[in-house]
Length: 60
Image (cartoon, rainbow, N blue to C red; front, side, top):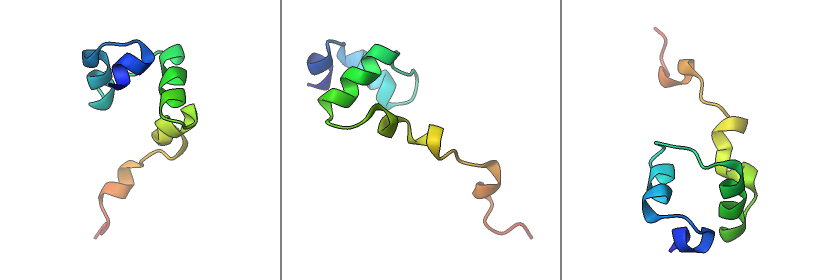
């Protein structure tokens, strides 16, 4: 359904959802509009990156 809203195939949306590919910028804005959100909110990792040291809570 989302693919139809933004004019993309189901497989393209699936690749984005699984993290295999990133949407092009125009597609990102279409996604944000279809989801009633900001494009920035779809890339939370860009603003709040995970750090490698976060994976080990007890360094001892």
